[in-house]
Image 1: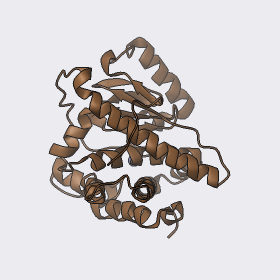
Image 2: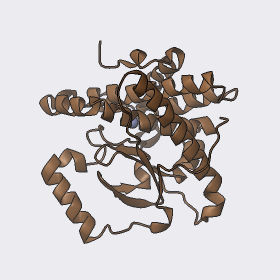
Image 3: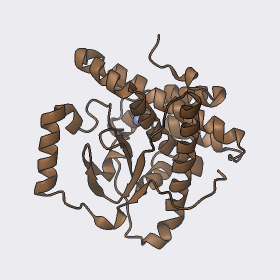
Image 4: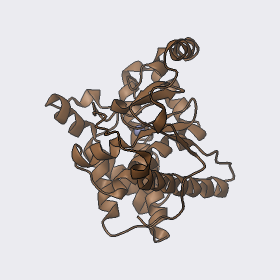
Length: 277
Ligand SMILES: [Zn+2]
């Protein structure tokens, strides 16, 4: 990737803060949220709609100081801003307003509008506060455990999470949640469709970045590799030793790579209708 710019104004850096006020206050907030939204908001990942599951990943963090991590922080910022300015233009062309998401960098754990965020959950988007939550340690996991190295693999993860923000702005996530409430038996399948659409949206952004000559040779392969690496079948095989298709919430490695590629090839969200057929 060849992106410019420094720290993003949409970056919220909480790395120095530890868990923060997650004691009584946090529990209380979660209780209130569960009363308002029902338990599905709290049970991170159970319904697969509001959070992303990458299997159990260790925090794997050294107490590295901020200076050492600054290049990563700048890279995350550059991707965040590039993806969001791409969506801003797309929304403007379609006659609607794009509202920027925030990205929260944290270490080990923090509070999110969707409950406690922990590194082990992997990166996720919370629609209730419209923020992406990311522990930089996940990128090490991505390279070592998921065997998906490269800056574009990391960019894919950020673009995927921002794809969920786009789904939130278009009301797609809410419609899917309604369908899941009406038909709990189809909840996992609906979740997969939502996730594959976010992968496709990441591909749409990659298309734009390529058009603007922001990509290096091999970047798209890194993106395809990362999309495959976080496929349900890969994660299940790694964590449980077997594959249970009925339990898929994000799609198989092949599906995830395929939808990322569809978005990349077409450069249009029209190619990302994972809900028909
Ligand atoms: Zn996702």
